[in-house]
Length: 255
Image (tube, rainbow, N blue to C red; front, side):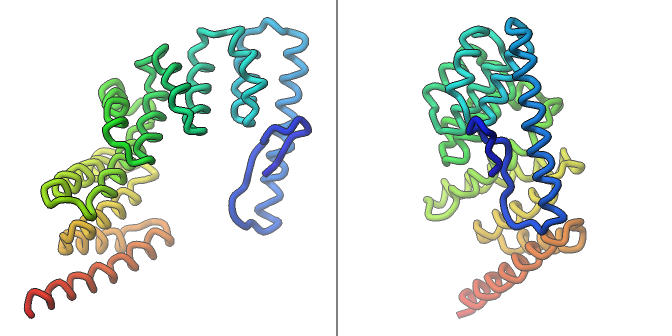
């Protein structure tokens, strides 16, 4: 993590990187801090500039310095962009009550509704996620925000996690919903950067629901057409595992 002189988080890098790859990360951190300090200096000269105040407050939220962002928020309480960022910040901290208060001010904001839906989905709270996800799907049918593919993926994962150890009818319905969301990405957003990920999750969903033939078919296609080596390796590993499960299931039936 790169921390500024005032304790704010400038940026972070997860995982190992050799010097050649790590140097640009350090350079970016220095550049971001220099730009931040330049904006602070400009704000001193133009303390009533709405755009500058908004930009600084958003940067404070991104730097995990909400105590410095709040006074600015009080100066421009009706700023939509800043309110959205406060909502996203509170969701990231799992302070849902505070985030919901902001959502009440801007109930139709696509980006904030998307963040609410994903936050609830990642906690497995499908019922709470549905109304927020529904608003996003209804208000952005052409995916002008670019948010829909990932929102479908997150819905699919949440439903997929509700398949195991459930009553047969519940598991079947959750399987249906998971497949629908993954299939939506595959059919509608083939140029999305998560197109192959949707196929991987679709194969896993079929495997969990013991539809081994469909799972094998999906993984075989992914092995043959995956553009990323790691995705291809993951598909191959899953393919072998599902073939083994299918063989064991067939053997059990024969016995």
